[in-house]
Length: 445
Ligand code: AMP
Ligand code: TRP
Image 1 (cartoon, rainbow, N blue to C red):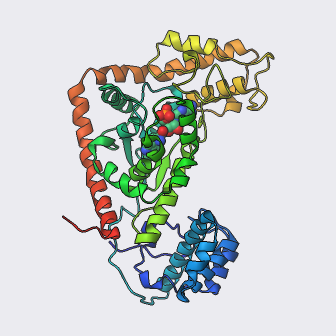
Image 2 (cartoon, rainbow, N blue to C red):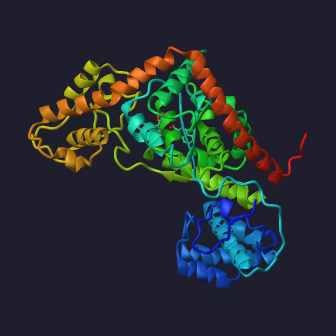
């Protein structure tokens, strides 16, 4: 497939930069570095530092003189990664200039690409228990809203769940329940590709390549790894908890993903995926599309009703702070009635000073399609705010619960829907995996 024309203002995912300019890689001069410098942050440049651009160009120059080894060794490891990243951008920039000038400077066959016109979206959720309101506002609802505008893939990542669950049967049951919930909230199997991670073996296969492209240091610095291991003091800590982001990178990169809609707690995992993809592309040639995290604004972080400074989570200390998607209307109203607020009585959206009230307003706003400031208008007591928020959530969840009950009663139909999803997912994932194997130069069987 022919690549699009590329200009300086274009985004720089792999698909836009497959310019066949391998031999151009070292043709970067200080002039180009300077123009990168004065342009500042290029789209797609995660680091965007003028000084790095200049140094990167110097590095490339020095590479021609065979001096790079000693310089690289003298640099701090992290700095080198940053420099290489900018060098890659410089290389792409040089390639694009060469292309614009219609100068041929060596070519390589273009790897297969996803559609250049439709945005590919991939998001995944772990089957680790019941889905709650935080999952819904932070993940599921944005997925449903985006399904008709973009080419969406949604994975139930059962292999990720193995990092913490050990008993037989648990993950399978959670997977089927979650599948029913995904269809119940409104994902349309005709439009969205909903699949189970373990049904698409390419996830595990690419994960190994990802593990070899990320460093131990990077993995051990991940916030989620540190949080999860500190909570499992004295318990079994699987190596999978450490290598988890490599599997997540495989999930994302297999689908030539442009966008990953996630709650803000997952931003770091998308960042490391970008780093891995850029490193792989630098080592082996452009192979992966560089994805971007998309964080939903309203209700991006739903807070625990009992502890409004922590996010709502099924692993919280008390159940009453977490509203489950399958809670009965009574339970929901009760949980909101008991929500922690403060000792004043003014209803005002002020996250720092009034976290409890603000969290209720966030939920009310998200449930009724308004801003939290709009939702606050007219309230003079906490009691009514709690009551109305509970009722708004009940009204929102009731139709979802009805659809869920119908779906979960028909396991054969659920399995059929998941098979269709797996087939579609595999048809994309297998091509990407082969592209990665070919880029590395693994011999075919
Ligand atoms: P988890 O419950 O950690 O498996 O999260 C599944 C998805 O829901 C992830 O994309 C999270 O970012 C999102 N999510 C989980 N809890 C919340 C929350 N309290 N607020 C917003 N999004 C959340
Ligand atoms: N780590 C994500 C979470 O805990 C789940 C996940 C796995 C994911 N693979 C992904 C999310 C790929 C987005 C894209 O919520």
